[in-house]
Amino acid sequence: MQCVVYKSLRQFDYYLFVKKDDGLTRVPETLKTLLGEMHEVTELALHARRKLAQADVLEVMAQIEAQGFFLQMPPRQGTDTAAS
Image 1 (tube, rainbow, N blue to C red):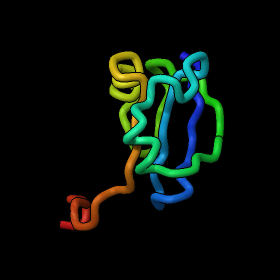
Image 2 (image 1 turned 135 degrees about the vertical axis):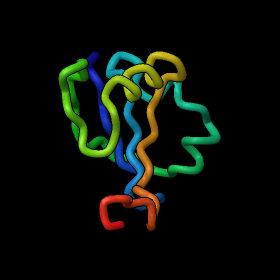
Image 3 (image 1 turned 45 degrees about the vertical axis):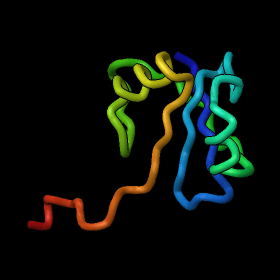
Image 4 (image 1 turned 120 degrees about the vertical axis):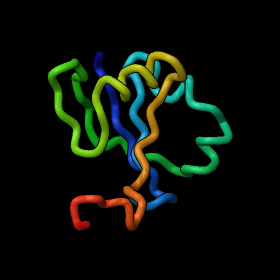
């Protein structure tokens, strides 16, 4: 799946993954309003063996297919169990 990743210029560290062919057309207007202006960061080929830094690639692909986008938000503070 060819994917385009956008960074929100309003919400710090929020990234929106969409299918290249769809662009932002399947993203709800309310989410677009929340995220504000978007800047295209990169284009990726998503597949089962690809590793992503903060998300499971299969979950990303499933959400893009089902709802038209995947929203990556910054990690929540205090959820790192490795430090325990």
